[in-house]
Amino acid sequence: MTSFVILLRAVNVGGTGKLPMSDLKALCETAGLADIRTYIASGNVVCRSDKTEAKVKAAVEAALEARAGKPVGVLVRTAAEMAQVLAANPFPDAAPNRTVAIFLDAPPPADALDKATGRQGEEMRLGRREIYVHYGDGMARSKLAIPAAKAGTARNMNTVAKLAEMAGEG
Image 1 (tube, rainbow, N blue to C red):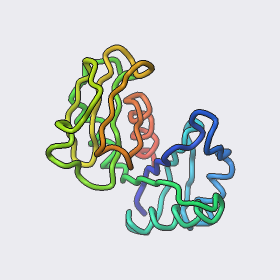
Image 2 (image 1 turned 30 degrees about the horizontal axis):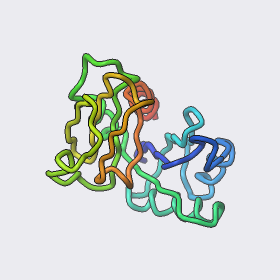
Image 3 (image 1 turned 30 degrees about the vertical axis):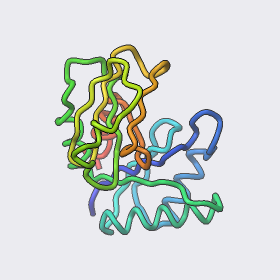
Image 4 (image 1 turned 135 degrees about the vertical axis):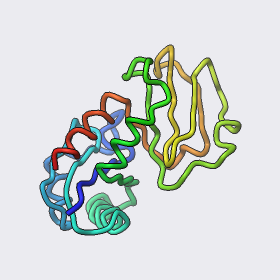
């Protein structure tokens, strides 16, 4: 069985998309996943499955849509991929709580950073299926918009490190 990290989009953020982690765990069980653990109330799941990444994603999306009545974005990485995302952080000396990986389903387009708007000193780099952003002054006042990241979901490097650690234990 493979260890996976599942990242939900727009869950328990800003008072919308409320989903208790106990319900998320139950949904993942319904989707046929094993050894399910959640991490902080923002839609992070570590689990194991003998399914492919695509089948894990489809099963969780179907279970979430059945519960929510609408599609919920789901991104999936293997434990090895999550460790690689952490190792590839192009801003290793920056504050991990001000550096995020925006997870995408596919590699970002080569011109993704050129199309970003509202820059105020943020540093950005492309990853394999991620866009890394260092918010030197924090995210709160940032006006940065990256069109290629619209369907993605961001996690700061502290969360990426913890999820990589949890998935590596599976």
